[in-house]
Length: 506
Image 1 (cartoon, rainbow, N blue to C red):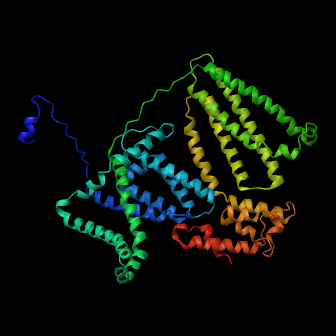
Image 2 (cartoon, one colour; image 1 turned 120 degrees about the vertical axis):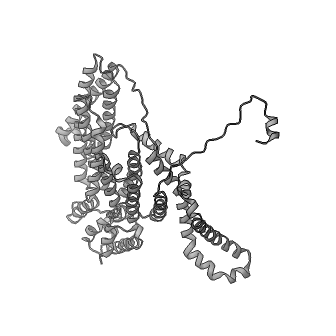
Image 3 (cartoon, one colour; image 1 turned 135 degrees about the horizontal axis):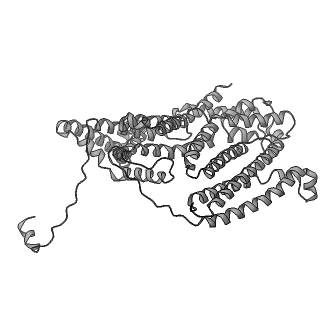
């Protein structure tokens, strides 16, 4: 502040506050880690493309190859839950290179989008909430957001470390990159402004368009992503985290006793009516004006939803109700009864689904419904354990069950089993129609081995009816599907074993 500025400031007035500059710690391998982060971002913007395949697998494996030196081997492998989640995420990532079901691709992508960041945040320094606490998800995601957006200066700090020795080489590299980018961007603009210049530089412009334009955009995206990812890794390594202490509010257990009692009575009446339909058979249903086929193919989705709702009610009662009240014992007894009734509802839904499948065959949706019933039953058993021992954590049982169940369903050849069931029913005459389009295009390439059992000259209208209005044959449809498999395998990012095997069949 010069003399004139000092004269304008009244004596005794507070001096203007100066913003403290955030100081980032640097390490000898900071530049190497930053280079690895940039390389990962380059792979990320290149690998993620539809159809998903080997590119997604490579991206997840590369992420953990970056995370290992960034966080250290001890942080990544010292806890059992971290090791389990590491193996789990790698197996889910490997599924992109093995299978081709579009639904599993989407669901696995969403699962990895959640699990990979949560796993990375769990490696942070400082005390974190345990993984079985539901609040841990918000805590870890908040930590990631702070790391991504609040530590953007970590990347420039790593670059400036030791700049008195390497400033010339760094300036040359950055200058060459900036010059290449500007020339690649300005050359097409100048060519469009002058026809003579366009004719003189046509070859160079075409070369840049074919070899540099797309690569330049990917490089720019990678450069934009690198500071955010580098800041997140810096935050995970150095910023201690303290868990938020939240007070759990409880209510009088009599409230939940009334609610659970009403639900128990309602489901008891419902099951009594259902048992009449189950054991009375078609004759009893006909007396009630309901056909057996209509009764069998309705209600299982609703009963699965009701079982999930009952599970939520039981968990709310066991978590929020005051355990010191006199009604607490009644809450536990009514919750146990509700769990038992929910298991009976699931068994009834499974019975109806089995009747429906025996009449109409298996489909991907019906197979996944069976899986959903099994998982809901396992969650109800975990809730029953909490009824017996209220101090036990439900999520400590439910989360491993959910992860294991999802991994198991990924290992089952669902599409192959569905196609085998449908083709067997059609060839045996049990079903007059067969949805070849559904099996070939809505599911994975694993269905082709079963569709090859059909006569190649079979018109699709003969097995699907007139709905499609097409004269295609089963053989021509399979040829088109194999051609699509070869197209998926042509790019390494979309390659997967299922498509490769389908493309190889002639």
